[in-house]
Length: 502
Image: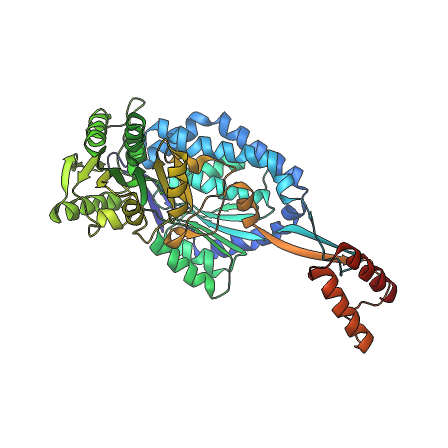
């Protein structure tokens, strides 16, 4: 069996790549499992040294990697540089600096009545991690979880998207040019069956980025063996433009947030709610700026083609559904092959797919509101909760909105690029996923948290057998000493008595 790398520009097959068989997946798992003990026992400083080599290899091959991403996805090269490669380098650099501190053994507080005890937490590698990555940002969304898993001491089985196999090959080439052992990471190309097999082998962790529908199936299958699973899923991200917003800046951000990477971003602006007093002005500004976008392929283009034919058809179906239900297309709405012209819609309602389902394409539905409470309620009127954008010059208003929005991430007076902050944990609520990655939380997601207590007491413990009347009285005295509201003098007297009697 083979998978085909197709050009989003022409639909022609660029290359055919062998699909991994069940036996090859099983053998890769076996090798990764055997390699996991050696890799996981390496000092973290040595693992970080390997990450540095990956970072240097990426920089040394920057043009070649950029070209491959662009060829495989159809995105313009500037987008590949800014949103695929740069965030990857930022995340690696973050772990180079922060990982030793994040994963070091921590001292924790011990209750006073656990006399002569020490409490610590250590973070251990999990083992073999199966990573299933998507096609919209195939380099970033493969490399960041891969690097995170590696620095935490795990080995990795990576399945790149079958829609962007050339990037998968390129990742393999990048790793081959570093000192990371060949059995530490396995690239397994293929479609649905390979993804299913990566779960059937019972890895020690699953990390999936993709649609909510597929994520639910993965979670269902993983549940049979209680495999720890992180899911980074879809979004229907709202943008709320308050009446005091800077409309010049907000309109530029809206055009970028809705149309960058042809709208194929999980944190893309998919719905905009504008205060009725600013609605007309905002609409005119986004229309004017959208008309100036350059559609095509090359260094001067802003918007490229959709990556897959299937997604192209889904976006057009959402536009058609909205129009049939009363929406007005202000600009765009047309398709040429896999190019969809940026589309602004008004008179939209929440009964339309374009307002409730993830569109994942270059659309901008705009709805006016009068009451802020109503705008927040409408923003929350979705099964998703990944990201949101708030526009206001009033920090108190911003805080009021951010506290009410049901979402995992929020950007105030900007959009989209908060996903590129390596220090912040990223993930969704509701049906936008489970777990977090990026930041210290993300690194610990790929680790087993092990709690340890060490007792240096040479005497019998208060809680051990045999139980006696005296022991019972001492326990009562301990409870009152540590938990009752008594005077400091009384507390000291009780402690002296307890230390003498126990």
